[in-house]
Image (tube, rainbow, N blue to C red; front, side):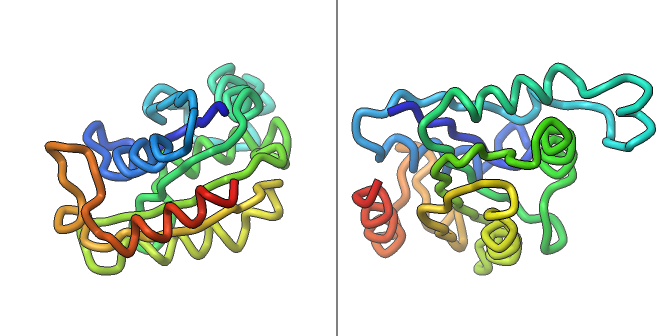
Length: 173
């Protein structure tokens, strides 16, 4: 199974990217493509830019990466209770190619943050809008207090409840 994993943060040391990779590794016999959304940085979306320059090739590359996978594992960072501007811009460009951004792929949605909220606000928003963009959400899990629940040296989640819930979601794939 091909798994596409990424965090929705443009932080070079993204904790969400680490969580997405961890979860993707739990999928048996998966071939993981871990991407960094910094590699898809584009001008801020506007209809005027689209008319003048067209849709950037990087948007097509991201859309094709989704199309070439069997499952998307993504972890949402939260900025002021919502999507990061880096992810929102990428998503806006890709949605101009096809509103079915996720192309009916199974999507495992995760979120984490340093705080106790675990970026649950953005996760709820993403989960609610997912059907409009042809995402088949197979699970949505939040990991609170990342640095208390993730061993950076070993690259593993230490929170047993999260691990049980993740295993349950993955077993249903």
